[in-house]
Image 1 (cartoon, rainbow, N blue to C red):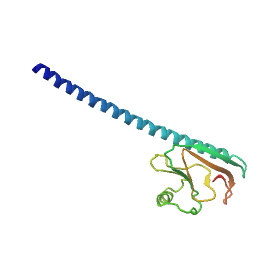
Image 2 (cartoon, rainbow, N blue to C red; image 1 turned 90 degrees about the vertical axis):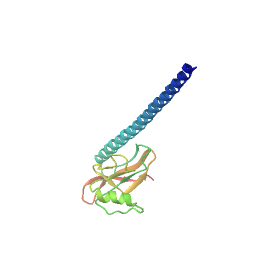
Image 3 (cartoon, rainbow, N blue to C red; image 1 turned 180 degrees about the vertical axis):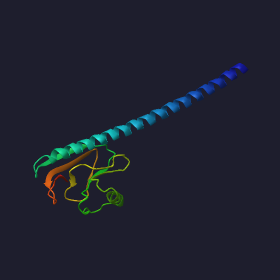
Image 4 (cartoon, rainbow, N blue to C red; image 1 turned 120 degrees about the horizontal axis):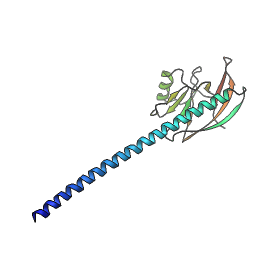
Length: 166
């Protein structure tokens, strides 16, 4: 009878060990999946930045007055993208304090991405400027639809202005 009880107690410890091992494996799997999702978002954001720069460079080479509607894809976790023209005063209504602080402390940058959880959330894109409003913010849901126009600035230089689509 004693032998049977010892065997049962050893079996209980084996099951407990197996449950703990399964929990550790599942925990590692969930952590890995979360890491893969973050990495895919970072890659998608990097692709967005490259495509935005490519579109701006292409528009810059066109004649003044050229326009183009552009659709760019980005991670769905990005809530909004704002374009800023540092040479002009802020004219947009409803600029929140967080964005205002980012604009004030990041002189020379012209693209601001919210939320700020991404490493590349503030950047500079050559020749790009906000068009009608300053800053010009677009809510996003996995994609950004904007209008680009090649314009002649007050300083006589050519820029690519961002506009809202009608």
